Amino acid sequence: MHIVTMVVCAVAFAFDLFEMALGSALAAVFSAPPHKLPTAQLSWLLASVYVGAIVGAPLFGWLADRFGRKRLMTSLMAVLAVTSALAGASSNSTELGIWRGLSGLALGAYPALMISYLTDLLPARKRGPLIFLVVGIASLGAPAGVFLVRGLTPIAPLGLEAWRWGFCAGAAGAAAVTALLQLLPESPRWLATRGRDAEALAACLRFAPGMPSLATSETAPAAQALAPRKRAWVSVALLFFASPWSTVAFPLLAGALLVNRGFRLSDTLLYVAISNFGPALGVMLGALGVDRLERRLTLALCAMAMLAAGVGFVLADSPTVLMLCSTAFMLAAALYVPSLSVYGAELFPTRSRAAAFGGAWTFNRVGAALAPILLLPLLHTAGSMALMAVVTVSLLLSLGLLWVAPAGVAKRPIS
Image 1 (tube, helix red, strand yellow):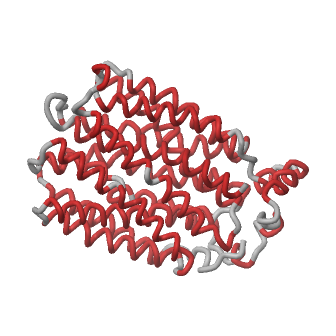
Image 2: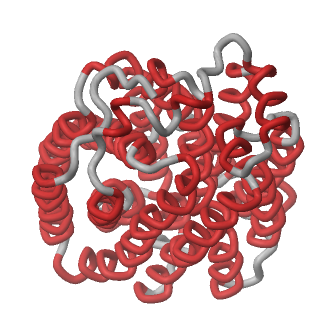
Image 3: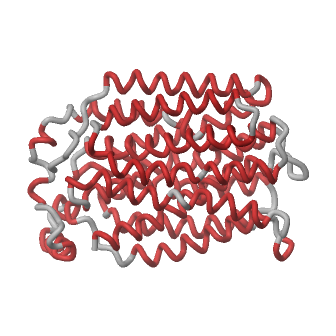
């Protein structure tokens, strides 16, 4: 049942990332003729999904702590199926932006709920590697979305633009995942905190013998050693706010940056698609060693790797070097985000985990919404060096925050 749960969560998250990656494709498509949009209009289009996420992450996190992780995850995928289909049928950029914003309600909330759900379910001694494995498999959804748009661009089946087919595929996948999520049990730990002991025991038996004792979830020594809840929440929220200025802004704007430097649209989509394999590779490799280092050290190493790769991307002229640097950046970013998510989720108790983690995750979505609005005009007016200066500052800020952040769970968590 652990394997089934991980597979279903990975497939669902793959379509979440598939939809998010369509933003990179839209950035390239609407930066070049014949669909080129004014800078301000394109910025708002790219930011709309994150604006929706600002509302969705805390709202659905709060609801998940009251009505259940699985129920809310299923509802989110149903919402995504409807809004993606309507986005594909949009008649203009304004309508597309509205539907992308509504999709953001689901896209912004699902990662936080999934991490909370898996943190509840997975055996603590294997939690880090297993969550990384789920994220690594799901990361294949991002390049799949961009490759789909690139492959269909010259064909335009049935006379429809390739980006519309991308949303149709996303809608179909989300609808299928809605049905699959119904097969999963509710979190036994969450059921226990709500006093539904009989249901919690029944759910535990579906995982036996791998499910750890419910009694260890709040009382183990590692949990007792964690920082006070308020300080932990502030630290995680600030780290989440700082991260999109590098981990989201770079992948989202890489297509626009390459078009701005004179690369053809087809070549740009190819480079973006190839670089999107970086997350899958990075997270798979990270799963082998995520529990060998303390969480904050892992995050610091990833931030420094992104700094080096970002500088190389800006200075490079060769397409090969550009792809290598872009892939390396996204590989490090792919390690950073799940590491930060696991670090944050482990700091909060089961009873309030989804709400606390979802609330902190909201700040990630705020930064992700502001990044394209502010950085795309900066790219067009001041060039790539100015854009990378912002990315650099955000990474240095993250390193400073990690220095003072509370210690997370040690190398081998026991709760």
